[in-house]
Length: 137
Image 1: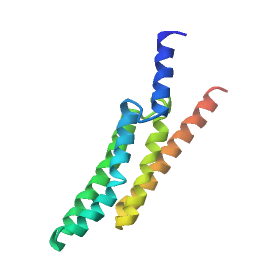
Image 2: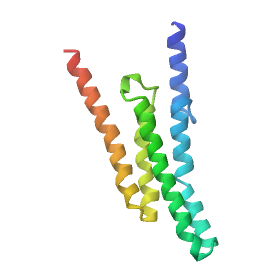
Image 3: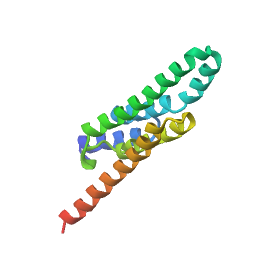
Image 4: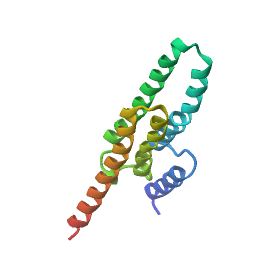
């Protein structure tokens, strides 16, 4: 086993377990910070004066859009499945998880963008796999 293969195996194991490394870590942290924060937002909205509630809501909604844009940015850096680190396609598809906080807040752009993003990642993966099978014939 050469050094490159050993490093790739180590990276794959790190990406599969825990937070991983590199872009996998960034996407997983984006998801772990962005999704549960909806509960913190509800708590803050209860505690702040009525005049500030919409401001808190708008800041979190902008955060959801920022998280989805971060997913798009990582996808743009690694557009081809073959060039991605291990498990990055799965982590990219997890951006669809922002559907639930968007649904809880009634944020319709997030309710549309999050599942559309997961569908987009799945379709691009399927197209690439199908293309790869046709290329080998």
